[in-house]
Length: 151
Image (tube, rainbow, N blue to C red):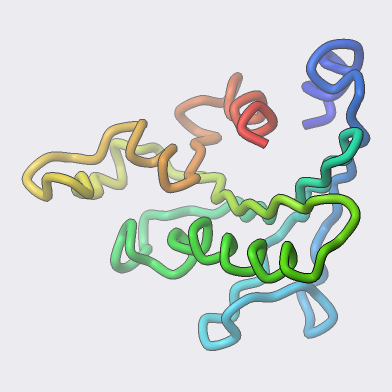
């Protein structure tokens, strides 16, 4: 992240304030759906002109995930949009976009998750990306750029 930010300080990030915060691992940290104890490891906060983007980022090995794309931690990228909508109703001056990403520490070929649209096929890199799963193992030189570009 630091290397990318330095390289893009006068490019993609020229008009952006970027803060990467380590989420606290105790009850003092930001957590979601307590039943599963999901506390994303990092909070990435981007400020641009009249927009704020807050992304909850959790690097993790996915090999032992149950329910694959239906896992609550994977589905959080969609659930967080409900929280975003609630924030919008409170009429803040600056719109806040909320996002969630998992950064896989497992190679995709080791996961062999079924394709969401065709369970008889393996999921593609596009399937993972659509579910906000980026791969640090398969795309070590581009997953940070992919993350920031999508935000």
